[in-house]
Length: 154
Image (cartoon, rainbow, N blue to C red):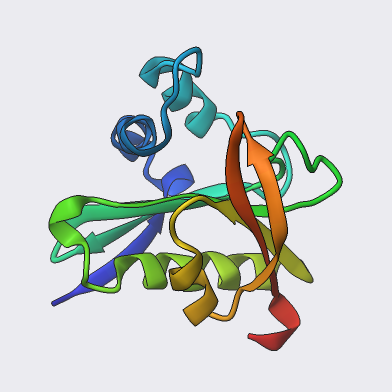
């Protein structure tokens, strides 16, 4: 099985697909539309932000991003690993792990010392990848686990 990871900034045609995945996995009432999400992906804020897509045998299989701000309750933290999603047809094939490792490498190459994330359901995955649980927070009224990854240890 051949794997490739591409940056959406180099392949803007992937933005609508990524936006659809984000809405499927993380959309909420009152949140952005697919069109607004697509526009956001295509014109991220300046700085260290990028969206990635993993391909399996040439087929898009999942996505992850590095963003500057991802948790309203913690504006003091960042950058963040965010929007990690794998298409159900590709789950169980290490796509999420490959995306996380790629994003960590991207951030480490930019001299980022620590990445943050929050998760409602994947603490085990991130823990196996070396992420440390810091505590809990609220995200839009729902409890999430706050985690960090010291990139000096990768």
